[in-house]
Length: 130
Image (cartoon, rainbow, N blue to C red; front, side, top):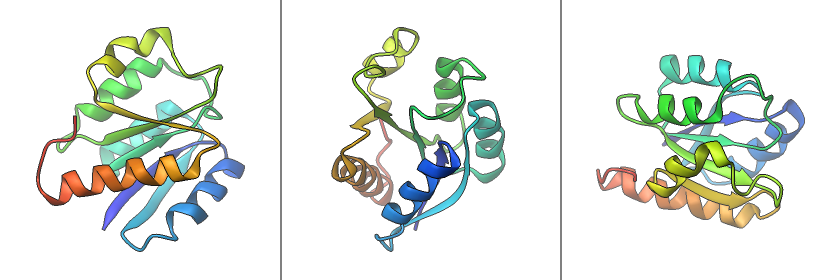
């Protein structure tokens, strides 16, 4: 079972949760719209994957969130859902270039599930996710 933390508004998290739970190998364990609270939850829950949606509240530095998630032991894989306006966050360019983040267009639920499956396969085979 791959555990998932959602960082999105309640409305968007409900849609994502329903979609993710269609696959019995993934389970959403928590959600919050706040990146700062998401990092606190991640330290306690140690999710396998954290899905970030553009609807999350802007109450912290996105690069700090990515760095914090990737510094967990084991590190949380990250899927960044993007829109044309958020496809490239200048403050995240270094993190994205390192390959530690999977991206999926916000309106493409198949791309989200493909990213989750890719991460799940890597975790299952004990390969590092990067």
